[in-house]
Image (cartoon, rainbow, N blue to C red; front, side, top):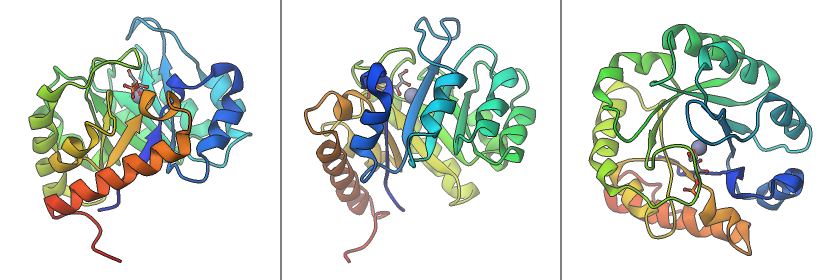
Length: 230
Ligand code: DX5
Ligand code: ZN
């Protein structure tokens, strides 16, 4: 299982997004974009125009996490604009199957996110429709919140469901992921890690990503799913 790091620009300097993306371009697997509308979550960030501009300034694939009230209306547009992954929230989507299919047919990977209080089991039947399941490890809306350990049993259950279904579906965690918490996430079975504060809140974002990646890989090896030596 490959461990992937998706640094979140929510903790970057919004006035220098292209530079911040460049700082992690050689080491990150993705660039995580938190789209918030002030309705589904209380915070308001950026939308499609900024994503379209950013696409012209970075070669990193964009991992768009839509924390918006009407993902059915907007998600396909992010895929059409060139985002490589578009994740919608199960709590917000009115027609998740249709929307996930539209994301895929626009050429992007389709992600489904669940909040800390949302059980994963009801979404097992949707696994054929998704390329990534995002289990939130904080309540969505803000960077810099403490990691919620109470979500870890659900990450393990999500791993079981996903592995039983197909190795092609990635399991992402987002919120409070740091050098201190990433090992627990990897041990529980996550393989894609979003980190905002732990990357862009440091002096050297690229070095922070390398530390996160090696901690995750070590933990995955302990779990028996990591890449073998060499
Ligand atoms: C929170 C966002 C996260 C956020 C994570 O709602 O979805 O992507 O950027 O920030 P940290 O890593 O600081 O918890
Ligand atoms: Zn996010």
